[in-house]
Length: 247
Image (cartoon, rainbow, N blue to C red):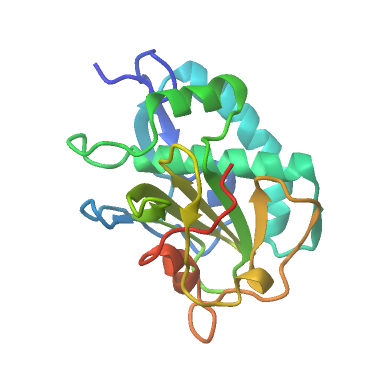
């Protein structure tokens, strides 16, 4: 029997991988989801709503529904490219929505592949809204053609002993809003870090851990082509460990 990914109950409800409110606000159609890196790449095609039986009715209709309702007024505005001041509550809602979505998309890996996020992390998110340790979430403005697109891949960071620390990156682009979640599987200490060069301070805003009020959008935007692209943003961690600042 397939279990709900967020609790011990049976997975008896189909979750919209792209929530209906995003589909309704994405007239250009839904893109794809890919997983690459250490695991084979898979795709979820579009357009239209895409459902997967990975959660139970209670999770789908209760805490997940409440999270979506909280995210809609914030993220719906950002999807349209509207200017918005993001305080601690708005950033926390976006971060929790982003990690929930990363976990849900990750469930599309073949069953023979081990998921990066653990049962304990998923259940802590459900029960108490706790985001996994050593997670950072950024947002950016996207001005390209994709309407809803996601990528995920495995990445590693080097600890103080030069031992590889596994990590996982999920990048989402929905309307004019881009989000990126990076989580390391790490036990503590310092991390020797490096990322691909780019104007990331001018094109991204960190929304988790909270560092202060953020005014969206960032000064620079991401596009499909040119000097600063959504693909560069997505793959900036592909060949180097993430930065310091994990909590």
